[in-house]
Each structure stands twice: as structure tokens, then as C-alpha cells.
Length: 270
Image (cartoon, rainbow, N blue to C red; front, side, top):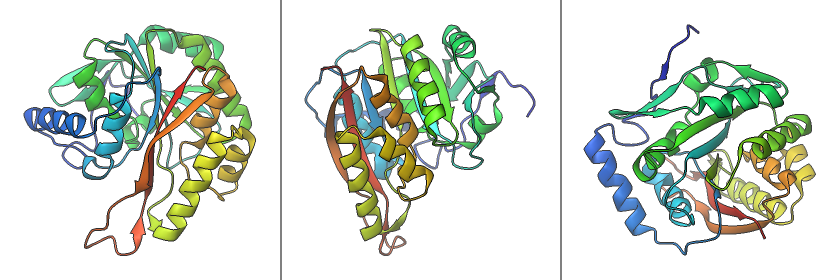
């Protein structure tokens, strides 16, 4: 893909309102509706669906955060298409949301290129994935001065998970927010989605990073952000885990007996 300075939105008007005023009102409404105890945490896991389904979960996560300002926001999502054995950072210097453009933290990108392994710098995967984009309106609304570090994880394998854990250690500080964008099942039969979601949460709470990665790699677990979550466990700094919200997406006339399992998690230092 030809280099572009700005990554344009791809799910604007589909997953969240296209109009800037409507988007602000939607986010305010979700934050007000989903009150949550403030926790000693700068790291959350939230889903990446349309706001009518995932908005409550995303708002719950942001309401739990201890700080009102962050200078750097690391956003980690997975790829859903070509599962390369790499970690992809963008060439783009801005991610556009509505009428605003959020700056990419180029200093952090340089650190990742220096200390990371199997790093690919490309806009192509970032233009195809929505996991990072879905949380950007909340970041733009709550932390307008923050710069972002968008990271896409390829295959769910231990080597990449260890690599990502090391990258996080190198670029995080007390003014850094970490967001992992992850659903806990595919859109499938409710019983299957519930089974996959509950199993994933159990493994995460028990700190079983190896099982989390291996079951995802062998398609026995459907948590798309397993690798990123496992990197937090491996990091060692985030060993206090709280499940703030969990459940299946609501039924609609078109969903039948299918649903996706969503969850909001908080990771903090004990």
C-alpha cells in the first residue's frame, strides 16, 4: 500500500456515529450510564464491536481508570485476516476520528523498532482492522492530548507474546495507558460462545499464559486478543486482574441463537 500520513476510519458510521456531535453525545451517554468504581489501574481489556453492543463494556473500562490524563496510549489488537508471524506498527503518523486526527507517538514507534523483533512497519493491516479504531473515539474524547501507539499482533505464538511483553516494558511509564482490544468469542452459537468466554476468563484469572496461547493457536479458544492478554501476564507487572463486566451480546431479529462473548477486564500492579 502506498504510504499515507493519515489512517482514515473504516467503521465510522457503522460501529459508531459518523457525525462528531452525535459521537460525542453517544460517548457521554455511555460513560454516564456505566458508572464504575475507580481502580488503581492503567490497563484495560475491552471489546471491539459496534457501540450498540460493545459500548457499555468500553465505557465501563474507561470509567475504571485511575488517571484523568495520559500522555501515551498503547492500543493492542490482533489481526483477523492474514496471521503473519510479526508485530505490525503503522507508517501513518495520524489516525483520523471524525473531524480530529490523533497523533501517533513516533518516539515510541522508534523504540519498538529498536528493541522489538519481527517488527513490520506497514499501513496495510491497519487499514483492514477495526479493533484499534473502535476505542479511538473514547481516547479522543477523554484524553485529547495523548499520543497513541497502535500495535497489531499477528499469530498467537509464544515467541511473539514474549516479544510484545518486552516491547510494553520498554515504552510504558506512569503516564501510559494500555488498552487491549479483544472479543472473547466469535459470533456463533450462544452455548459455544459462553463456553469459550468463560474458559478464557478462567485461564486469565489463573495466570495460565501458556494454556491461553496454546488453546488459541490450536483454535480451541476463540479469544482474539489472547496473545496480547498473555503478554500482560508475562510482563509480570500486571498481576492483579479484575473482571468488571462480562456477558453475551443481546438477541436481535437477525442474530437468532448466535452471540459474541464480551468482557471488560482491569489489570493493575499488586
